Length: 430
Ligand SMILES: Nc1ncnc2c1ncn2[C@@H]1O[C@H](COP(=O)(O)OP(=O)(O)OP(=O)(O)O)[C@@H](O)[C@H]1O
Ligand SMILES: [Mg+2]
Image 1 (cartoon, protein in one colour):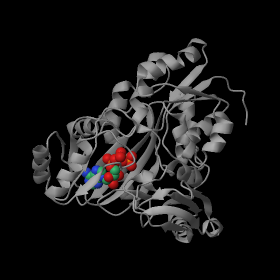
Image 2 (tube, helix red, strand yellow; image 1 turned 45 degrees about the vertical axis):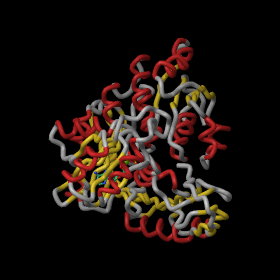
Image 3 (cartoon, helix red, strand yellow; image 1 turned 90 degrees about the horizontal axis):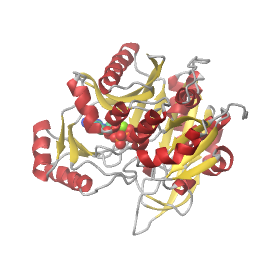
Image 4 (cartoon, protein in one colour; image 1 turned 90 degrees about the vertical axis):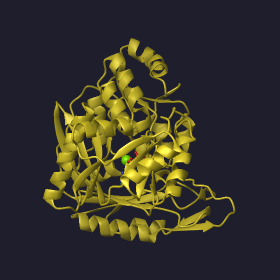
């Protein structure tokens, strides 16, 4: 590790996952003085690599109200005034608008605040895409139960009911009946704030259900030109939820299908005004062609940056940090392989006693990572969102097929032992 590159990189909050903390490690390895800005830094202590990252890669912790651009700007003011602040970034959706606002105030690189708000808010994102003629499902911000039912009837069953400003699939529900629409609507609209304590928009989003398979399109804007890194195949868990059970990069789809998805992502990014750095666009391929699920103005989450690195040699986290600190990104591919992640989920509710088979999983050829994000004593349950997952495996191969078979073989070795309890709660840490 070198510490010759001067300056401070501030990371404002993160995802509750190993991935979430790795930008701090990458920034530190680039020589930056790293500052974690958080309203509750201890929330990250539960993450698998927290001990290492807190001990070795976070130089300073600043505690402030990270839901407020004023508070974050004030907290970072001394670094800025001392001419040390080189960049401010986040990889979590909740803080993208605040970070964009702070970057703009300090004249640092970043998304324009309007683009950040549009990417962050699913209603604004839908409006922008629909307004630009980009294929998007029918959507409606329902603000009463009757309104939600009317929208559901208009779109037909099943439909999707979801919050407008969450992440990790929290609260996203497939509703097959009016009762399910009402239950989902009540759940979402009764919570005044989101998972990170920010005010939620009133009501809930009711959407037409996109039937098909899902991919995401990964890209980076470098010198005004959008460079596409590739398409990721996404595996989902059982309905009525949409839990991310695995990712595969590069996609196993044919070139023309990947092209179609990539073209849609390009148009969606233009529609939301995405104008800086990495982007992760989720796309559903339906019988009518590709439709936008979501536009994220940030790096892909889950383990996708690791898959990209294993598959192509591109260290996306490092290159994105370079962009955020005014440097040039190097997206040169140094290898052509494939990588796949698969997630471990509890099949029953209870208290986790142990996860057997970790050594076996590690010994499967091609496996590069086996990581558990929850330990013994943790309450677990079948996942309703990505935060409920127990851990993951990552495997590489010469082809996508090889990587997938290896990841699946590794996942198959892992055996969570769960003792039943009468008070199940979800409990992952992603
Ligand atoms: N209209 C829809 N039709 C079909 N599936 C949908 C629809 N909206 C959402 N989904 C599914 O639910 C998942 C989560 O939805 P969405 O991306 O809107 O929420 P999120 O909380 O931001 O997710 P994440 O942070 O996990 O990407 C999507 O990846 C997709 O599988
Ligand atoms: Mg999404």
